[in-house]
Length: 321
Length: 157
Image (cartoon, rainbow over all chains, first blue to last red; front, side):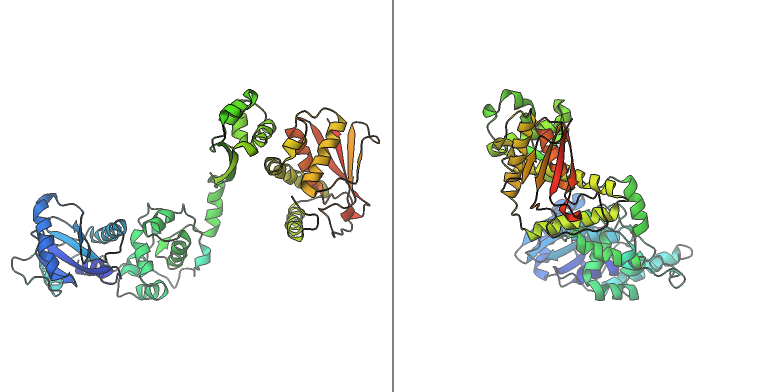
């Protein structure tokens, strides 16, 4: 429990755009805090009490930065203070990422008495959880430490073995949990190579989001995200299609195609009546072949008509479909 | 549009020819691929130049075809073809160019029948089609393979 909680919270701690955070009780009392300015607590508490049980994700704009409040469960609220220049959407996305990490973690309710905003409270929470676990039959084996993958026996992979396009949906691999454990060698390796960027990307890998969606959520170019994912795939942290598989997939999947579509931006009243049917269809959404089909005339004739109006407002719009 | 001695455009076309030759099994197939390339290029040419305005709306006779070829030469190469022959072959117009732009400084050996400049056949064929003329165009002789001039046969169907 505490390992997962600690991992999730340290995600915030190492984030350069996070000024501080606090895990608060439903009553607005700070339980575990890190660099969260004390003078903001009253305002946060006020907001929490205002919404009581109805609190969902909430943002408060303060002079110190943007505070995002997010309920973790019935007992806990995560409060994060981000740097003022961070975009609202990104702040919310980052908070949601941490919430996603906290999903499935059974946090015990806060103790009756505790010293507010102390980091060692995390251990208090841990001991409560341990007590609860010891009374509940045999403790389950630790979930966070997956069985070490038989990496030595498995074939060596390189990032070049994988193909990533914008449409690729990366899935969690066998070493996913290990890579997110702050005390693992894999995490160290990833941090050395990509700093927090690798961690941030992995947080968004959910088996549903495409590479383009992940890149978009992080305001990063697809190429950069793809590079990290390929590396992660070579370490079995994520699963990606292999180069050969992707080629096979490409047979069934229609690749995007570059087309040119005429668009008439001139005066329709100056178009010859014979040409109107064609010119009207030149709206930048159809190729000349599609216009020919719609108008029921040969494609060469359409090109001829389009060419006639080149100097009268006809433009060719290139696009991929 | 294009200047005759344009090394940049020539190198682009040279690359395309090399690629097609590498991908095809025989000369006939390569010729057809180059003609097809020309047909697709023709649309862009027709849509971005003054050919449509400088030619008659209806091309009916071989003389009209000859005029059209002259306009295409003027627009693309800024000059006239060396000769347009409407007499030698019935139903055909022969266009020859002794300063062909496509195969400047290209020397091919052991490739008889290969039309290095077949791309122009495709361009002419498609432009004629835009004007409502059904024609088959192919390169008869090519300087790249030892011909004195490059010549194209425009056979009206």
